[in-house]
Image (cartoon, rainbow, N blue to C red):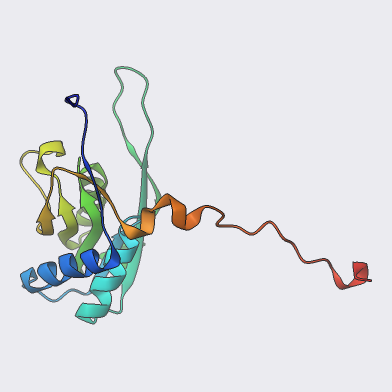
Length: 175
């Protein structure tokens, strides 16, 4: 028997991702001035959507939440974000791979709207049971899930040695 905290995993292939994107694309009912991809999970689906939709203006947003001291409020730190001049009065599609708790998407959407952007959100997967914001969710999603999704871009074995340890010798030290 599994504990209540156990979330079954689902490993997706690139073909699975293509199928989810194909399901997501017909849902969009507007044209967008730009896509904002939430790093790191939103980079791949955002790139696929921008290509399929012909959107050339692409921005990234990186947000980090630190664990606060007991009794204090969690506040996002935006590590990377488009400047207001690029987003004010623009219609933006914010993309991430999954909306589980929703904290990243809600933080990014809130900051974009505060800068005067018109924002819609899209994810490949929506996990409503984990959502911390019961009054909201993504505007568009490819599938609803209760599983922990492992996307092809975050499979650990693909990046077992992402940085080569070999460093070429300067020409003066070669024999």
